[in-house]
Image (cartoon, rainbow, N blue to C red; front, side, top):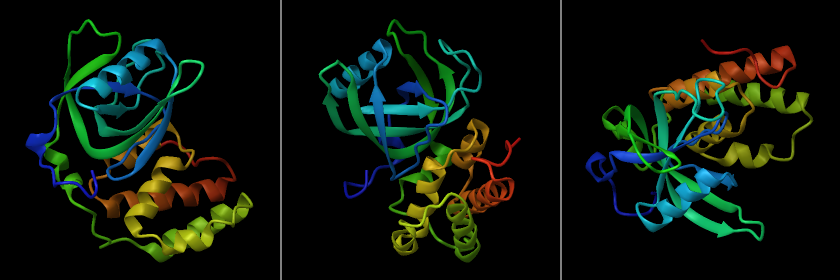
Length: 218
């Protein structure tokens, strides 16, 4: 919640609705646009708008589309924009607040799932920004240039060079087409420097294999 009164862990709700979505990564201080159309998640957004205005983004760890197993770590997001389309969908934007670890799933009558979470190990997510210390921006930049050149993407390079390490690393982690397990590894990276190192490796692997991603992180 950049630019607002500073939060601490005690300010965050312990029970939250969750939206399991493979490949969709939300990180602190980054924004994630979503197109909501399933009835259970339309109800979730409607309830969130009337109450806490927060939703937890998590990735499924199984292929079950109705009630998949969940990875234990997700990210809490605040609804910062909301609109309804003519055909009944919601177009929303979540602003990442902090990562959480799921402690248990609640027994509930709502059509969407709710979990009890804790935030303590991710308290640093509530800081205004993360340190660039330990990030090899030169190596990351070189790997990106190779990756972009391979895919004939060059129009964004100048703007990429001008953004902070945090914005660059976290934005790329969210938008690059990595496997679910790779996305989860990026989410769970303890600090920005760890995420940058992993991201660089994944991009180098993708460029080397000439594929959309480079193998699954175990």
